[in-house]
Amino acid sequence: MPPSRDGRRWTGWMTALLGLAVGAAAILAVPESHFFARADSLADDAPTGERWACPMMDFIGTRPGPCPVCGMALQKVTAGELTREQGRRMGVQLVTVEAGPAAMTVRASGTAAYDHRFTTLVIPRLAGRIVRRHQATAGCCQEVAAGEPVVDLYSPEAFQAQNELQTALRLGDQRLVESLTARFARWNLQPVADAIRAGKPPSDVVTITTPAAGQVLLEDFKGADEALLVGREVAADTPLLRLVDADRLALVVQVPEAQAAFLREGQPVALASDGRGELTAISARIARVANEISAETRSVEVRIYLSGARSLLRPGALVTARIRAVLGPDLAPADPGDERTWGRFPLVPAGAVLSTGVRNVAWKLDTAAADGRQRFAIAPLALGPRLEDEHGNDRFVVRAGLEPGDQVAAQGAFLIDSQAQLAGSPSLLFPLGASAPAPAHQH
Image (cartoon, rainbow, N blue to C red; front, side, top):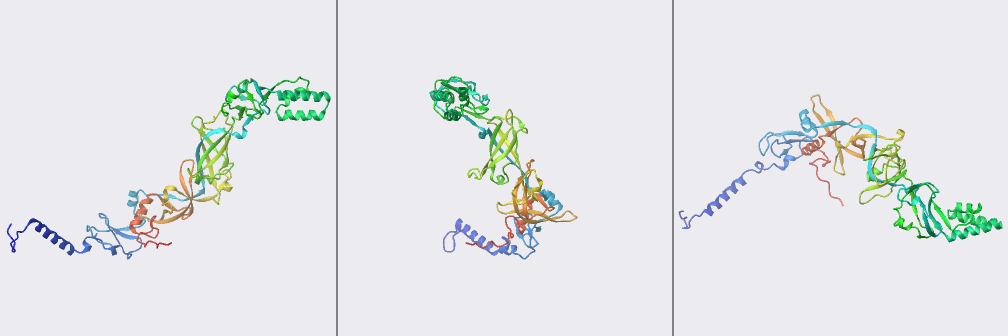
């Protein structure tokens, strides 16, 4: 390479440095508008809700003309306005807001168990030693009748009381006779006192019987079978057996917090199980709706009492409960069997509602032209509860924002809302429009 005027040689890095300098100067000489859209292209000097978008580049302006990036002609974007072809491509489907009762089906599952309101304990009221076991102690699920013998006890205390009663009868001491007879009644041994009064001799063995009919549950007592062994000493008031009514069961289910508010005591419940299908022969009603909400599951415990379950449902079976709930005019639980107590509200399908979790909107059909062009307007909503019917259709109760007969976009509503955001007009995320200034921060 030839030397420079000052005698130094021209090197390659000097050439590169010179090229960078010339390129930077050229870039600085080009107007900024040739590279970036100016901020004033989004100024609010166009009609509200009107924007012009490039079909090729990510550019949106407020004036018609060529795209400053690629030169293509800008196309007008109007919020909520669709041609017939646009509506077809976006898959927009309309539904009509209807007025009707706020009816819902609450579904929950639980495990059937014995209704212990009807549980009876077999308890000897005096101490003794077991000398004989009867059929009632044969094992779990044994059916027994009222007054059926359970065990025979050797009881010196009962033998002494029988001798005292026999002596009082012989002496004619009526007060003592009545006192001793009452003692046998407290021990649930009235037949023993009657036998002494009938002239039978005293016995040191008494029979403990069942106070009511029922089904035996031995396993409810730890070591129950061992406790009933012949020769075992039994203290007074020691439970021997538990008797339950197999025809009466209880079902405890957990209902989501929002749905539990519409349940009340006495509501009928429809039941079904995998093994039996619909259990129409069993009568079931809500007995209690808990006042507490589980912080872990956000659910409420609902207790259901069943009758007529014998031979149809076994304890431990998984049961599905369906509860039809209807709301009154004040959104409180109404009587599902009395239409006079029902309220009527505008109802909108859940698919037509766009929600942020705080704000809810729908896109309502404003006008429809003869050429198929449709214009939608955003409708902020105040919603009531979400309802589900027997067919699984979700609908919302509308407290404000829509009226019966209004048509809303049930499918394609999200695309309409996105179009409104592009146009800078009010939308789900921007209640005042995308170009509106953000609200001032307040403390």
